[in-house]
Structure formats: structure tokens, C-alpha cells
Length: 593
Image (cartoon, rainbow, N blue to C red):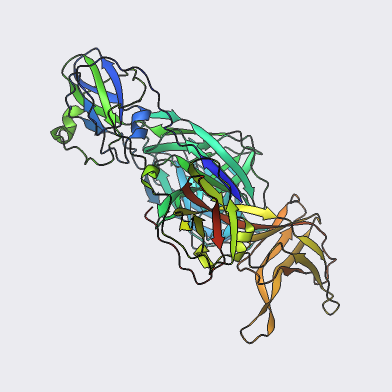
């Protein structure tokens, strides 16, 4: 098991000697940040990133003090992005032409659309399209080739065709059907952008971890601020030709567990090979409001190799306040009050009269901690020792070494996962005969093991290749199996099976997962994935491949992947700590965390 010791600190905070002032900061606010104005009147300034981050979500605790320490009314101004308007094409036509679907449609507006969105009832497909445009319906100009169009049942889709500047009224889309059956497209909708410049600022992005998992890349990242609205999170990659579905998730506490929450699904792509005018789309998350800076970006690679990434960049939308500066001097932002309600100012009702405020760019001081604030450490209020526990019904235990007082994260190993009760309800941390409260973090992080595998062909089934895999333990739910096969061209049905005993004591063969493995001559060698849906009851399973009348495939490697979970807890090294598991009758614990 992997044990991590967390050192908690306030990031982006600096301690500097305070400028002399005749008044004290309110003790209920934890942070302050000052700026100096050299003029008076109605002014507008941007709220510093550090103050936005140290405020609560929605900024109900944001306050502004004048040079005398009095609370000053202000109005918040966040420029809104004008939404694009759309128009459905009334001349949409679709026809099949040999191994292609041809769509033709027009727009009646004089301005060029920003993009066109194709409508379809199909829920699972992947196609490549060529986009052409014309002014008269006779002379056609190729706008882009190889544009990816797809939709997946998990929710990601790419049905948008961006259009370059130009006077276009008629459009033609040719969709390649030679590798898969045609897809019914039912309409086209034009979107006309209403570009309103939105002030933005750069936002730092720190990549904490990049994990290559079967069919996807997981990037755990930390943004350089919280409680913001993203203008975009951008991938920096030199790849000339790609299209990937991407997902942005965040972990939140739900019913005492850390669970991944979906923030958005999107698509990124670039097509710079061949004749194309298609602008790349490398950003996602435009207009996404988020609270905490830790996120996970998941890039769906499917059967493609992982993208080469040279980093991530981001920008956030600026937040402005408008107020009346009655005098020159030093003004102060307050933030970090966990309990106060939002302020109610009359100035918020005078929006039309605030448009003429002069934008100023004062240099803010560093964010500082109020020395009179009583710091509330949530974990300091947690009693690390809970109720007593009779350990007799538990079958297994593991000692957990800790060397210092603090908060720890314990990753559960494959032995614990295999021998625990359903949903890990029986896990208990025990010290001195009493429980240590913990939080269960179920954010899925995949780990892998390479099982031993040997041929185990059945003479009675000569058209089936069969391998016996020896697992490290029985009862582990592996989410997928991956294998590397070097054969250049094939299409085979694959399944993983195991023996299971029913309640009468009879053995039967259970299918743990099945799929189709295929490779075309132009495809690059890659790991093939077999999704699995259930856990075997033994540590011996069999991988079967239907060859029909084809020569057998050769497996060069096999890997099994499983999702792990973690326990987060606070402890002192006064006495040994043990993790107890293996009690199928135990109910899930309920702690005051």
C-alpha cells in the first residue's frame, strides 16, 4: 500500500510587514489585500487573483474598506459573453454516393456563419468528412479534409464544422463511409457568433501527475486560482493531426466519500496535413465556473497513441468592482470569512449609471493574513481517536507505519481490495483498540499487474486460441485487460472467462468480458483493450480468441488494470495503527467528518 503524508499550507500567501494604520482589520476576515488610488470619483478596478481565490465561492465574503477602515459599497461587474445565435438550414439534403454520404445545405443570411452543427439520431459512430463551400453552387472550394465527426454513448461528440472567413452561402459535406455503414444525418444548423471581447488574465497550470491508462491519458492538475470562470484550458501539443474526446472532472465530498464529479465533455483536434483551412481547437472549458483548483483532465485516446503534450495553459475571466473613491489613499480588500452572508448594497441597483466608471490599474500588495484572525483548522477539530472496536469478526489486518502527527492518504493495495467486503464497507483503522475516523476517496486511479500466461488450447475447439492467466489473487475486479499483438491485419472476437460455482455446487463458465479486436493494414501497432464487467472467484482465468479460418494471433504481453481507492485520515504515532478488513457482515462506518 502507498502511504502519503500531507503537509498543509496556505499557497499563494506571503507575509509582509503591514503598513501602519490607525484601525484594526475585522477579526472575522482572514485575508486582506491593499491598493493605493491617486484620484477620486467613480472608478473600476479588477479584483486581484489572490483575493478571488481566498474568497468563498460566489464571493459573499468580499468586502472593500476605505482609507479610514470603513466598509465601502461596490458593484461587481463581470462582462458577460454574448451568446451566438443560430439558424437551421431550410434546404438540407442528404444522399448516398457510392461509399460516401453527401450533405448539401445553404444559409440565407449575408454574414458568414462561425460554424455549422450537423444533426443526427445515431448515438455511436466515427467518420471523416470533407467540407466544401460555394458562392454560386457551381464552383466549389475545399475548406477542409479529414474533419473528424463522431458521437459516443458516453456523451462526448464532435459534430461541429468551423468555417473560415469568406462570403459563403452554399455548403457541401462529403462523409467517408468505406470503413463503416452510413450514418443518417437529419439537418444542419448555422451558428453566427456575436463576439464580445471579454477581459481575461493568464492563469498558471501545474501538472501534478500524468498517467497513461488503457485507452486514455489522465492528467491531474492544479490551476493557479480558485472560484473563477475559465476562458479556456489549452493543450500545448505539436501533433499535426488528431482528434480526441476530453473530459474534465473534479473530486468533491459526497456522503463522506470523495467522488469524481463531471465538469464537462468536449473535443480537441488539429488537422494541418493535406489541404485544409480548418482552424485547430485545442481549448476547452470556456465559461466553466469552478471552485477548487484541483482537477483531472482525461484524454480519450481509444486505439491511438497518447498525445505528445508540452504543457497546459489557461486564462480566466476578470472580475471588476465599481465604487466611488471619495478620497485618495489606501483601500483594502477583505476575504476569507467562512460564515458571513453576502452584502446588500444600493449601488447594485444603479448599473446603468456605473458605465462611465474609469478603469484603473493599481498594483495590489501581496495577500496577507490577518494577525487577529483565529485560524480554524478543520482537521485540528477532528478527534483522531473514535469509538472502540471489537476486532474479532475481522479476518485480516495490515500495520500502517507513520512517523509524525499529521494527515495521511493510504492507497489500498490489491490484497485489501480482494479480501474486503462489498463497497469497502468493512475497512477500519484501529489504534489502541479504537477506530480512527477516515474519509474514503473513490476517485478512480488505475494500477496494473502483468499476470503469468501460458497457452491452454482445447483440442475440441481447434478454431479458438486459448491462454491460461494466473492472477495474483482471486476476487479482484479488474476493469480491463490489455494486450500487445503485432499481427498487421485481423478482426477477432475476444473474451475472458472463468469457472464459477453456483449455489448448488455445480461449476459453470462465466464470461468476465468480451469485445472485438481489430486492426487494419494502415493502423499502427497498439495495445488492444478488453473491458471487464465482473470479478472472478478464482485466480485462474482464460483468454479466448475466435480465429475462425484464420491463423492464430500471437500475444506478446498481457496486463490487467484495476481501480484503486484511498483512505484519508489524521493520526498520531503514539501506538501502532492497523487496517482491518475481511468482515463481510460489517456495515459502512459513519464518522463526523
